[in-house]
Length: 494
Image 1 (cartoon, helix red, strand yellow):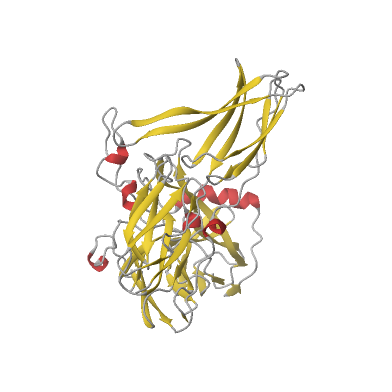
Image 2 (cartoon, helix red, strand yellow):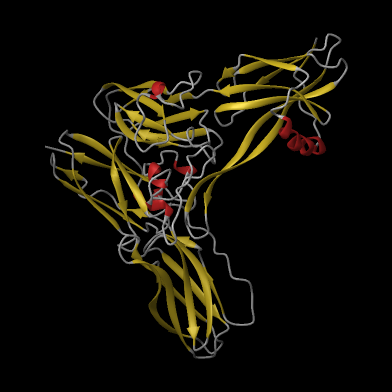
């Protein structure tokens, strides 16, 4: 028996050939592949032994997975998950005189659940076996005062319909869900330590539905080889509460401006391509007639999804006079409007120039910052968007999910009024992007509903995006627009 853990040297040509071999995956293969163990967490060691092969043959050990991505249309509609099959060489070796060859490899940091492992000789698949990537939960640190940021890391998250979501519970309260589509199977969330001094439980439960499925051992999709509940403990110690950073520091950084392709007519240049409501935009225009009165406009969306429908609109931002050279320079505040892409227009008669600009979300501090037990508090978010993936923000207080606020009908403004808890001390509000609606067409999803003319699939029963109307705790995995998460705090004082 030959043993090898040699670094892969499989060529691009061989990798291309391997893609064609998957059609033989269900065929009877000449060799046999055993994996020890047959399941494990990311980075654990595995020994793969192939037998029944032709002595002296050079073979490669190949890992099957997928390139998964969120499927969001240019119009902002959420359509679930798309995935393309991938093959990655793990190692290679030469079959010994006894017809066997062995490899050792570490489980890749990859999507969880079942993966095919192939042994390939030339353009032929000669052996195959399945390996299960198991989920693993870690928290860091494991102790600290109230407000300590706890990094929760879950590896082995899947990408198919029944495997793409895990739910986080803190002291048995539902905090939100963990996905890892764009982070390739690894979900990371940072939550504040909340509650009294002493131990606190963290649990993750697998399940796609908007609430955790508590008895998955009785579900038709249950796999006894994969745990459905994992747990950890965090101990709150004494000491001053750890407070979050300033709200304005938690917004996305401003993006550079991307000019329109140069043309013969007038043009606009902005000093930034994005910003929060109220942030200043420097505007430079050129190519206009000398002394012309330049009308400024701002494209947006008005209405709502429920009653009136959404319509395009253009707002009047006033005018500016061009210089004798046909230029102008001005500064304006980012309009208090819906988040997402807008167009700034500069028009003289039938001639106009345009520039794209994106409003990104921002949040104000909780008001008041100190409140009596059960007193009133207000949270305000600006720049909430209109698309399936941007028009709501979800609110978590002290690691318990309360609900969401929608900004479409209020031009991106979400103002939430709540009662403060009765327990004195520092309390925490987390605001996460989410998915408002859509149709989930992930691999393994139930069939999409049959549509009649004019029907909106996202409003029908079935596997739709309302399954995911939850805080996206691994918010960097949010589909569609890049959106920030925010953490605020306030104090309840007698």
